[in-house]
Image 1 (cartoon, rainbow, N blue to C red):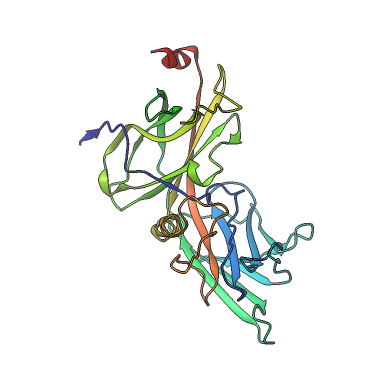
Image 2: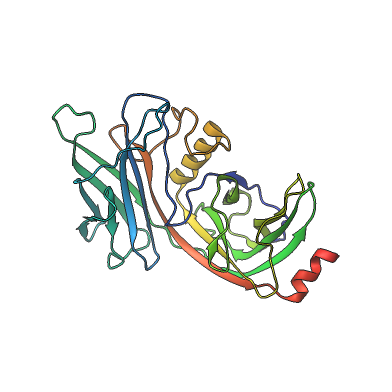
Length: 298
């Protein structure tokens, strides 16, 4: 068994599609309405959501209208559930925490009872994705990096990649329970083709910026006693290619899809935009000690 102690993986900065609370925003440069599906389902014991909307014209300042009153069903090989709409937040359909994910099951989202193009004929849409098993985190490390005219804390991962299949990962970081990587430039992802089946020893997978290249300091620098949590998502290959395509199409523009998304794939049928994201999660935390803080002065 080889033990790879890699300073940096070939990680790419990607879009903000990470935790269950984050959303897909779509701005299409077209007056033609598009059905937009923003759905997420993980192995975590929380409520998940499906958000349905119709894209606004790119040149319009109006908010994208939501799609209320749809029939939304989530199913796997063993069971199915019709989702209830959140009447306090129309267009949002709740996947209750009682609907548990099973690893290696295919989950299918079916949406019907909608007439997006207004022709009087109802349409239906489907999307499927597989929930893969998570890869455990053995431990985390932190280091100080003052290269590239920036100052940041880097998060090191110690884990063991699954040798039986290709895996795709996304990484989000929290500081004292608050999601820190909530911008396009702050989530990183990786494909294990460079280290499949090997030990991952001290690989930098995330970072927390304290001072940018213009000398601007963060409002919340890391302090003694802070807790830093890494969320490692085992994602699907199609989701990996989806976020990669969006990155190539739009660069680091905000909002998501602020450029023409003609080449961005979707796993939703019938010409819809957006994505049904399914992934498992591993988490671990590290507390900031004086020994860690002293790394800034070395």
